[in-house]
Every structure is written in C-alpha cells, then in structure tokens.
Image (cartoon, rainbow, N blue to C red; front, side, top):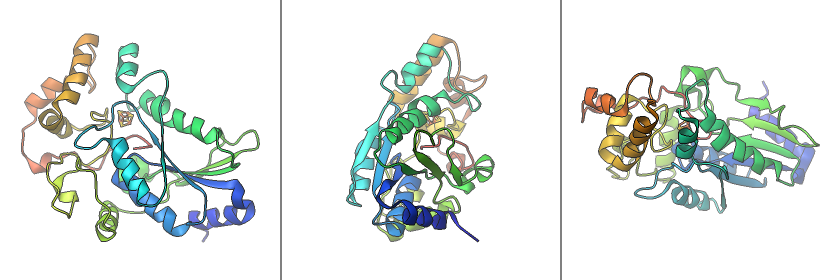
Length: 277
Ligand code: SF4
C-alpha cells in the first residue's frame, strides 16, 4: 500500500529542488511533533516553517511566537510569521458584530488559512507539500478527514500544492511520548500532566487563541482564573455586541455554572479546532 510518505518521496524524486515542504506551526505540541517527523524523514528537503498570528495568541509566560521560534530553531530553521494585514481576531469579531461559529469559521479562513496561502503563493518552488499537525484522534470530525489531498484551489499557474497531515495516525500519547523522549519541552500553557519536566502552572490542553470559539466551559473557567485579561477582552465584546461567543450563554454565565479546581473538568481533546492550531 502506498503511504503519504511514499507519495512525498516520489514527488521529491520527480521535482528535486523545485519542491518544498511548508510546516504550519502554532507553537503547540502537534506542530512540533510534526516538524520533528518531517526533519527526520526529509532532512535534505527545503523546509519553510510558518506561523499564522491571529493577534490573539498566548502572551505569557512566553509568547506563542517566541516559543515557536525557539522550537523551530532547535532544528536549525527560521520561523516566518504571517498575519492578515487588515484585522486581528478581536477586530474581526467586533467589526462583524458576532463571533465565528463552527459552521462559519472566518477566524480560521481569514486569519490563518488565508495568510498561509498567500505565503505559499509567493514561494519560488512550484511543488509545495503544505503540512498541518492534525490528528484523527482529536475528534470524530477530524478522523474523517483525508490526510493527503491535492489542493485544487491552490494548484494553479504552474504550481502544484498538496495538503498533508503527517501525524494523522498518531495518538495524544504518541505525541507526548515523542516530546518527552526527545527532550522537546511543551509551552507552559499546557496542563501540568502533559509535562514531564516539572512544569506547573499550565491550564489548557489545546494551544489555540487565548479564548477560542471551541473552548469548553471548563477551559473558559480556567482562562478566567489564569488569563483574566483575555477573558475580559472577550467578555467585554459580548457585552458591547450583545452577542455571546457560546450559544445562549455569556462567558460570565458559563463560569458561574462551572466549578473550579476539578481536574476532570479540563477541556477534552475531543474537539474540533483551527486547522493551523
Ligand atoms: S484558535 Fe479558535 S478562535 Fe482562534 S482562529 Fe482557531 S478556531 Fe478561531
């Protein structure tokens, strides 16, 4: 059976220096695991690492950008950060007067996918393997995705683009084990049980925007306790727009109904979130 890795090897043989790998890196655990896999499998292939900054990325104790840059530098590579020049996440929400939803996810398309596609269109290589760290185990919806697909919309004007999810089959345990055995630290925002180096103080299991439309009620409670500034920014938008981020419940209503300090209340991995997160 031909695997996606075989497909990439075949394309490399065919196109040589005219092929490049693009790694979508959020600063999160899956991005770094994917980067490690790609450098191990394809050390000689031109590799670009790009981060799409929504303007609402984690800022403490170390910013998502600085963290991603350090992680990428451990492989001797540079990080390119791209942004939508016209809006940040919070500006987008305020201008539209509503939050994105699972079915109309402008945040992903306008703030992540769009800037990365623009980056890809400006590369000199004509064959691009565009990689994201999506895993089947993250959600039922994700498990149905095709981990290897030609991007018809981007394959134009002599350019050929494939979208690949190189760690699609890996479990959460696989990813964490890889980090631990390769001494690749995790951003401190991650919950303590994800670390094996004694890092404490983290409170989330996903590396998304500081408050994400897919944050669970338990996540929101923890954000309220650990990143009050982000909570207040989104809660303030809810009040000004008279529109709640979660259907029918304001952030304050959510935290008043969600107990604090219950470990089982951590947000589960069983969610669907941004393609580039
Ligand atoms: S992390 Fe969440 S809020 Fe941010 S762009 Fe992705 S889906 Fe939207």
